[in-house]
Length: 377
Image (cartoon, rainbow, N blue to C red; front, side, top):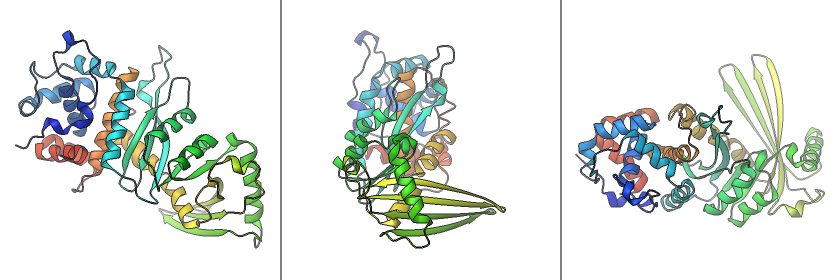
């Protein structure tokens, strides 16, 4: 039966053990490796992680110390509550920088997600909220960062940007992240941006909206621009998207305060559902110029972070259903899920993500293969 070499688990080996020496019956590396193996096999709470370890104890003993056997579920929970989540976060990001390099033109959406199960009604404690950067070409989480209590994504995104290597890619963020310092942080990384606009930018949103609506509604606009249209039909629904972008922004007040700003764009989405028609327009500022195909791809691909990351974490990993309420423990376990997701996404064998994870639980060779994707044995 194949087994990994413990020396290959580099990102875990470097993490500091927060426990007192006299309380270390089990090594930290043993606890971390059993946990990542369990999460890869679709096991995601302390009791079941401990049971998973006991059920596979003989296999684990081939490469782990396990001097005192498999830790109890209380031990798993206590260690993850003590573990410095910011250190674990940095280790995760550094490891992904070594494993995966974004390619020129790759779309990298950044967006936040709350761990709903961490909300404590009795203590009136807010949920843990994580901001992630997602490489859409390979479906990999490049990194994540927890927002500080009583803070929001606006303060977290610049910190995350500084930790990533985004040269050559296009970063997309929804309206909450449309901030001057965030635009500058993206450009400083050698990347481009497509940032959604809403009322949080006050006059900028209103000015861009009025200008683009006026030019778009003309029979023939007199300014240089590029346009593109797509039509999708599915289950009785017809959705038409019209993209319109221009570099004609000399009139825009404070444009020089937005680092790298080259164009503004609009998307008009018209949905025909069994004869019932609805229309919506969305507005953007961009550093990519008036390349309408690139603009349309960035806008459409941004939603991958919702559909292929957040949705998968909830449906496949049951993240919102997890009831680990200790903030630091929940945060650390969320990092494990994203590590596991990155590994499973690289598996090209047949079957859904859920099937691949269950297969790893039934077959040690399949589990080792997933570990190889993640730790590059």
